[in-house]
Image: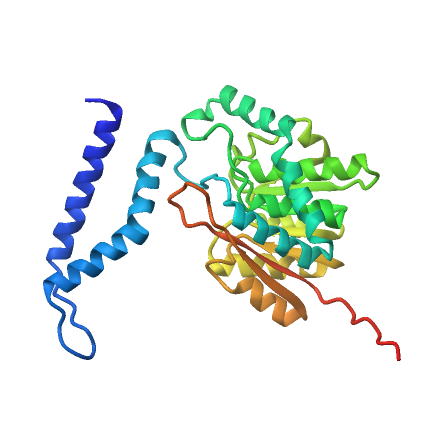
Length: 307
């Protein structure tokens, strides 16, 4: 039996298990009106399956064969989603749509970073659970904001393998070459996290190991860009925002990697008089529906009207 045949046979077994579970459930009748015939229900089921489920199931089968990832999935974004991301960046950073798009494309064209990630993935022994040529996904937005805002201090909680760390540091290195130095700080409770974050990217940053709240409390100085991506419980996310509130610079931007699940960053923005905007990911050729980026930033003073 070929590898592909084994995957399809396993998928067939999972489908049969799902059908058996559904057969054990009581039938669901519409709240109002007559009960549909089985033929009508099957017709609607076929429409929904062909329109939505079939493409996702095909992507899932393809992903099971080509990818080794089991969490923190990486993927590229659709072309339309990249355009939406550029618009999101331009609103937050106050830059032109063209410039935001150029910064996003700049990361796509960074062969040095791409080679760095692939070489470490191959040599670290992590290739069993990590993919080569990782897609940056929503991290493209992180990169573009660092390029636009020129932050002096960037903090990311929860680095995992260090893909986001490298992306943020790559933007800081570009800024430094243009005369705008900055430094990166990551936090993670796992002492093995951040194996991708090696030189040259580590030259302008470091990872603080231990509980993120404790690491944030010990961090001195002002934060210009804060990325929440550690413990994804709503309670812990809220505690992180409260912890860094007094450390934020007047023009600081906060990014929430959990904003597609909770409203904690939105609530923080409301309580502190900040603006809020959410970007929703649309992965290309991947079964995962995507996450997103919540952003909270200080309201700009209105421009005086001249009469």
